[in-house]
Amino acid sequence: MKQSWKPGTVLYPLPAALVSCGEGVAPETTNVFTVAWTGIVCTNPPMLSISVRPERASYDLIRSRGEFTVNLTTAEMARATDFCGVRSKRDVADKWSATGLHPYRGEAVSCPAVEESPISLECKVREVKELGSHHLFIADIVNVLADERYMDSDSGRFELEKAGLMSYSHGRYYAQGPELGHFGFSVRKHKTTKKKKQ
Image 1 (cartoon, rainbow, N blue to C red):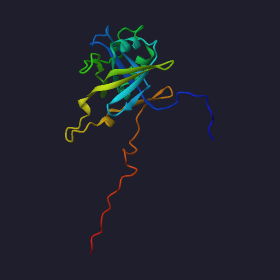
Image 2: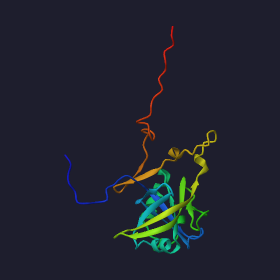
Image 3: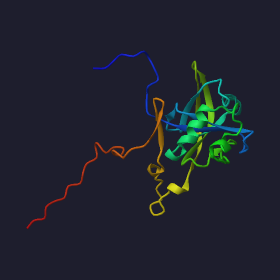
Image 4: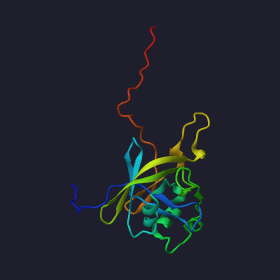
């Protein structure tokens, strides 16, 4: 049996992402904050969205500059990620130093990425939808920065599963569990070995 609840935002788990914005790498011109409401919205062209409350300190930075970077987080970054979500730039001017995170100079945008993040997606805002408590920034992914620590030197494959990614679910942070399968494994045909004739 299921209970019936009033409408709510219980679509979990979500990535616990850090969004960096501003210009350059100096703490006085940049900020980093936590966003759980983010996701891919289109493959071609590659696009994603983030939802931000207008009263957040970084809202005006993103709206005026039209760019930001979404940085995936790992279990090792849990404390820093939480801090960036509960402390405002209005109260902590330099969240980089306060958390031990480091700004990494952007390549396709003027805002920084987070150096400790295994994947950083540089984005340029395409559209803003004012929905209510949150405004939805729909953006083009213009570049992806991938940490070379997760590149397999033999195969050249990027092994993101080894990064220890973190997710957010109903007010709590979680590390990823074991692999359960891969895309298409439910319909993949298994090879059968033919018995040799004696």
